[in-house]
Image (cartoon, rainbow, N blue to C red; front, side, top):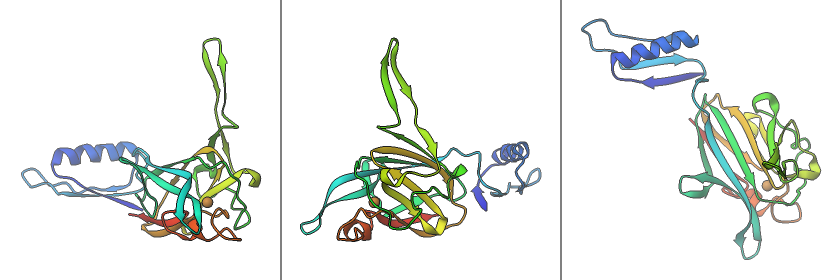
Length: 226
Ligand SMILES: [Cu+2]
């Protein structure tokens, strides 16, 4: 695990070096002597745990017209700066905590393609936080709305499962209950291109694995970590 940082200016490097010492990171810092041009490359070894999480927000909708034969299918979108974008190629940083938010507008249940894909794996603490219509209960109190929050879970009952966001090569599995918002934290420690899947039978055909399930940008795609 390594993070490469290119800096110009001795002051910045000195501040960074002090920060690294304070934070206990092992570091190889090259600083030029007095009167010499400072080194411009600093190599830090260790996960960049102090950086703010990188947020990836996915929106899961239904009613997307696939074609005239298949009809409507569910799809994952990336919520980008300009709205909904394709999920065919998702870019994520390595060695930085990723905050994954999935906003699921699908209220339908789907069966499992693989047993146990309703169980969380690969996230911090082995859990996901689920807020949904059924477990976030709000009521009108005397001074406003009373809100009872969601819950952290290690699995989702199969009967409540709509989709998953799964990256087998990273051992990442985030089950997504119907009509819910899911939040999970994880870190990717190796660069590469990995395939993400939904592992419920939410697609087309008798097996539910055609249509959206076998088409990039719908229920599968590439995850590029760099
Ligand atoms: Cu799905």
